[in-house]
Amino acid sequence: MSIDTVGELLVRQAVQQGERIYLIAPDSGQMLSFAGLQAAAGQLAGFFRERRLPPASHVAWLLPNGPLAVQLLIGTMAAGHVATPLSLLALCEQLAYVIEHSGCRLLFTVAEHAERVREALALVERAVDLVLLDGELPVAASGTAAVAPSQHSPALLMYTSGTTGRPKGVLLTHGNVLAGARLVSEAHQLGPADRVLAVLPMYHINAQIVTALAPLWHGGSLVMPQRFSVGAFWPQAAAFACTWLNLVPTMLAYLLADPAPASVPAGLRFCRSASAPLPVQHLRAFEARFGIGVIETMGLTETAAPIFTNPLAAAWRKAGSPGQAFGCEARTVDPATGAVLADGQPGEIQVRGPNVMAGYLLAPEETARAFAADGWLRTGDLGYRDADGFYFITGRLKELIIKGGENIAPREIDEVLLAHPAVLEAAVTGIPDALYGQEILAGIVLRDGSRWDETMLRDFCRQRLGRFKTPRYFVRLEELPKGPSGKVQRLKIGATVKSTD
Image 1 (cartoon, rainbow, N blue to C red):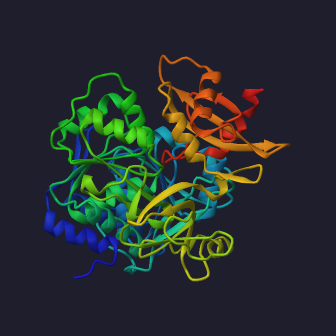
Image 2 (tube, rainbow, N blue to C red):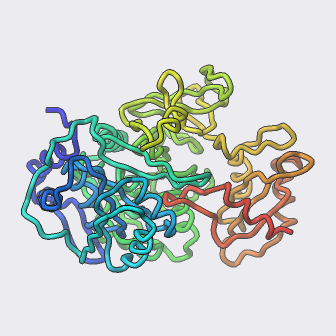
């Protein structure tokens, strides 16, 4: 029997898995079974009925990681409504914009965030029901979806980080999110015996699809602490017998930088890395130190997470590549003409498949620009495919540095800076220059105990990149500006240029 909606998947797994554990919350000790998750979804559906919520209403929440966030994500979709998670990193005006734009009718939060939610709601020009939760879902009799959704019905509304303008609301259908969950499960050959340590924030697509919906698809389980902690990470993985890890490159870097010895559980099969390019140096260092293979992948909010993945077999992986297209199609095209390019030729990467979004909410022109004339999604990523079908990402169209008429891919410079033993994190961007049009600014985060020496870094780059690609400016930062997924927001580094004067 085919599974077309999140509700159908939930029913199937509640029958097949029953009281087997689906979620463990180490901070509170709470455990949630598959049957318990279905019961929570029914309780939530009953609450929506009591509130006379029209079908396919947008339901928002601002919550820390934990059972409540997962129950609301899955329960809202199962009840035929549209899950709309809000970022804990959003400022008041950003929250107000998303609340207003999404048209959400209900908003859930907890006492810890109630004041900032009320401040945001004061800027919204319509009524939104605020529901304060105290560790549990609101009491209500069990119910079902008022109108059963289909695979084409909207299920999840995710807002992009909005680094270059207002956030866009990415609308994903039941078919999209299930495709994402299925592709993750199949790519990594996951099953009921697998358990993931889920430390990414639940307001990001990676956490929602990879660590919440994928285990629901394959009948596995997840361990979800409230936040990522370097000191608690390995003990949690060991205590709860996790078999795989789901991280972003920043987290790998901080685990590597921790001088404390790590007790790595023997049962860990692999570490999955996504949401941003993983420097080859960090990949190799992580594997060497912890003895765990790293599978680099790539996805977008607009594709319900996965696009590319490296193979499960270590011998077939390629360091520096997010992998091959899996479960969807990909191609590289000339950004100017749209012509499909041959292997090895750099251009813009485009994809199509069952995981690709329905469009942007209330933005038909933005949606039209996001797709090529023949229906392929423009990812905005620059790169190329090699003869084996592996893709290599060289940058973003909006982040490409154009110096003296020459295109420079930021990642090439990043990789050189990261090879220096004093550098923990690095990212470069272009800034205006009267002579060249743009010059190169490097933002760096130093390792603890390392000294700051701009001349040393400049000489290091010149030896490996030549004078033209060596950054003109260097600025030391406490941390790189990042979005909720951990992806570096290069364009914001330019705001620090005054620090170099």
